[in-house]
Structure formats: structure tokens, C-alpha cells
Length: 566
Image (cartoon, rainbow, N blue to C red; front, side):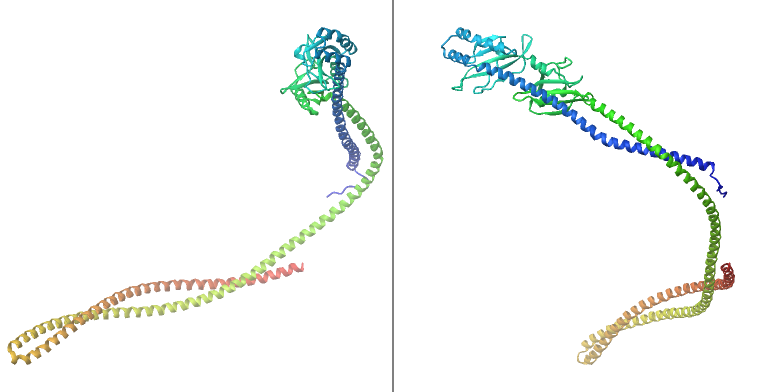
């Protein structure tokens, strides 16, 4: 391995130091900028969410403001209608008319100045129709109100009622029904049907201040599940979108809140108090959050600029420190290279020495294993030689025993043959005895017949034949006993012949077994002779192996001793 020069830094070391310098400066700059970006994002994101929530609350506030304005308008026209209905003079004239104290013409003439004055004092009032106690028209001034549009408050109610916008001769109005109540008796004496111009309400609804270019205010109601807008939309359309219709339906039931509209629109809705009206304010979300987005971009640009300035300042501060660090790093690199050269040389020498030691140790281990195995082989060969000697002795003893067994087997075979001959002779003798027993039986039968004949003759002889009769009876008894003995001898001979036949068969079987056993013993003798010869050869070989292994073990021990000395 060629060592690096240690007198001065190399070109590659200088370029490496410069790369390290650039890496540290750029890494520090990137880290500072990344930390600034993370801090900015962690700060801006919650602020952005709060600003968006504030804009959504502003939309709710716009809906609520318009709701209050509409409620104030409705309350004002109700108050105007109740003020017209509460004039004492007009109420007294209507009570007299109800009682029949004056006819209709007289009532109209007496009431006309007061009702015309009411119309003149309230620019929004365009017509008044006064009804009597039975709900019939008593007087009418200004714009005529069709009977089908009259709005009568329920009996016993003292508050005014406002209808939905109605159209009369192409113009849109609001109809307000105000009860005329006698304060003394609290009885209703009639009803004023007041027709109001809706222009003020329309100006409230069409005022899009603060709603930008996409803002929309819808005033309407929901009847039978269908939403209806009282005025055309900003773009002139009269059909509500599903989202606006749903918002009006919720507001008409008394709910207030926000919901997402069609596309990217946000809708805030609110109910109108004491009516079935509702108001909904819609605005495009992009325009709704436009100011927030612009503020966000300005803040992001400002933070990015500040981060870049901070990063540039940090780089200017770090560059001299990094130069000093790189100089020290180069000096350390030179020392490290010198140390590496020495370390490589020492490492190579140590590796070579360790390699030699490992080779010697491995050779020593192998020789030790070889010595142990040689000893084991020598011991095994000695054991095998001893076993072969014992096996040879045993095989010789086996040959001697088989020779004796063959001799005894030959003697047993001769005895068996002799026993077979004697059993056959005994069978012949038994057959001859049987013949004699048969002759004795025949003789006993004949003697019995002669005794019977003698007894007959003695009977014939009378007194002279009595002695002969006694002799004849004895002869007959002797003949009977002789016949019984002959039968017993025959039975015994039968059993003896059966036993002799069994013995003869057993002797024949034993003779065949003895012949077969002798043949097997002869074969065993031949096999034992072959085994003896093989064992003799194994004994000679094991002795030679034992001598060789002992010599090898001695040589290996000498080699191991020499290596251990090395």
C-alpha cells in the first residue's frame, strides 16, 4: 500500500475540504430556511383557519343583520296598521255603524278624512279597506284590495298579521290585517286591511353591500315542502338552486346556521321572527376568503423574505467559521493520512503474522487430531486382533462340538433304526397273539356248545346224569370265562397295535429328522471351517494394522513435538 505524502495537503484533499465547506454552508442555510418555513407554516395555518372562521361568521352576521332589518320593517308596518286601527274617532264611528246608528254612506263620508290622512302620513301605505264586525267591507280608500287577499286575524287576537308578498295589477304588495278592538270591552269591532308598498323591503333584500360580486340575498318561505323566493335573484333568475331551497326550508322551520351550497358556495340562513319567512345569504367561498387568501400570501411573502434575509446573514456569519474549520480539517486529514499509512503497514504485518499463526495452529490441530485418530486406530486394531483370536478359538471349539454332535447324531440314528425294527417285530408278535386269541375264542365257543349238549344229555339221563350235568355246568362256566378273556386280550392287542403303529410313525419321523439334522450339521461344519479361515486371515491383517498404526502414532508424536518447539 502506497502512503500519502505528509508534507503538504494533496489536490484531492483541498477539493474535498472545499466541498465540505460548501456542504456545511448550504446545509446550514437550508436548515435555517426549513426551520423558518416550518415555524411560519405552524403559525400561519391556525391563523388562516381562524380568519376563515371569522369570514364565515361575517357571513352569518350579514344574514343576521338582514334578518333584523326585515324584522324591523315588518314590525314597523304592523305598528302603522295598528295605529290606523286604533284611532278613537274611527273606532267610535265603526261601532255606531255596527249597531246600525248610521248607514254605510254616512260612515264612509265620516271616515274618509281620517283614512286619507293615514295614507298621506305613511308613504308606504297605498290602500286601506275597513271591515265591520262581521268581516264585510265598510269603507275602502286608496288602492283597492281584492277580497281574496284579505287577511283576518283569528278571533281574540290583538296583534296584526302580515301576508306573503302578493301581486295586484302587476305590482307586488304586502297585506297587513290589523284588528280594531274596543279598549273598554276588549271586543273586536272591525278589521283594517292595509296594503303596503314592498319597495322598502326589496331595497333591503337587494342591498349587496359587503357581499362582493357573487353575494346573494334571498327572502322567501317554504310551503308544502317547496321553497319560494319573494324577489328575483341577483342575476334575474327566479328558480332557486337546491342548496338555497334547502336553506330556506330549514330557516322557515326556525333553524339558523350555515351549509355548503352548490359548487364552492357558502350559505348562511336565519328565520324571520313571528312569521314563516326565512332569509338566506349566499357567497362564493373563493370570494368570501379572497381577503384572507391575499393576507395569507402577503404574510407568506413577508416571512419568506425575512427567512431569506436571515439565511443570508447566517451564511455570511458561517463562512469565516467554516473556512477556519476546513483549515483545521485539512491539518487533521494530513495527520490522519500519516496515521493511516502506519496503521496499514502495521495491520499488514499483523495480518501476515496472524495468518502464519493460524496456519501453524491449524496444522497443529490437524496433527493432534491425526495423532488421536492413530491411537484410536491402533487401539481398535489391537482390540480387533484380540477379538479375532477369540473368534478363532471359538470357531475351533465350534468345530469340535459339531464333530461330537455328528457322532452323537449317528448313534441316535442307529438307535432310531433299531427301535423301528423292534417296533415292527413287536407289531408282528402282537398280530400272532391276536391270531392265538381268536383261536381261543373259537375254542371257547365250541366248548360252550359241547357243554350245552352235555347238559341236554344229562337231563335226558335223569338221575344217572346229574354228576355229568355238574361237570357240564363247570365246563360251560370255564368256556364263558375263556371267551371273556379272549375278548379282553383282543381289545388289549388292538390298543397295543395302535400304540405300536404310532411309535412306528414317530420313529420314522424321528429318523427323517435325524437325517436332515445330520445334513444341516455337515453344512454348519463346512461353514464354520470357512469362518475359521476368514477369522485367521482377519487376525493376521489386524496384527499388521496394529503394528503400522503404532509406528504412525510414534512418527506423528515426533512431528507434533517439533511443531510445538517451533
